[in-house]
Image (cartoon, rainbow, N blue to C red; front, top):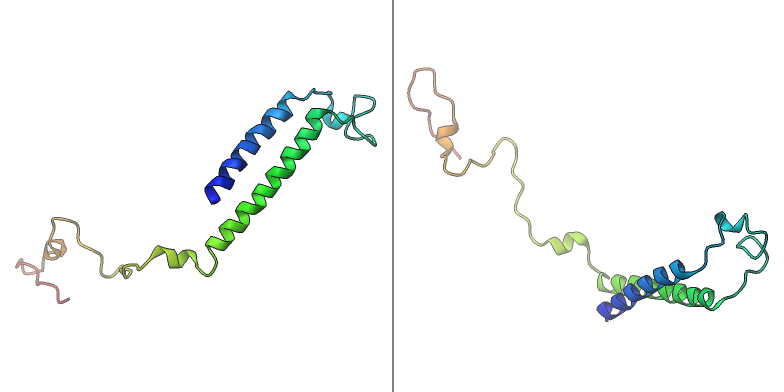
Length: 122
């Protein structure tokens, strides 16, 4: 269901972009320089493309709300942390993991008397 609404939403977005780009530009931001009939005047001329723009915009908003409701229903009662699954215990800085191929004894500094370092008591 979510995929169907998402595809319809995509087609509505593309259609809305195409319809807006096909409309005639009247120049001047918000119709300021057109002398009348712009967005600032009381009533703009209702063309077929203008009406289609409103219909597509309303349908786009409806599909946006539907996708929000579907996403909320899918995530009800769960958290992002719940979806991560079991995690490994965090290592402290005092006990870092040895590098691959090296033993823990190889990483210890040599002792003062020149003998090999004592193994660590884990």
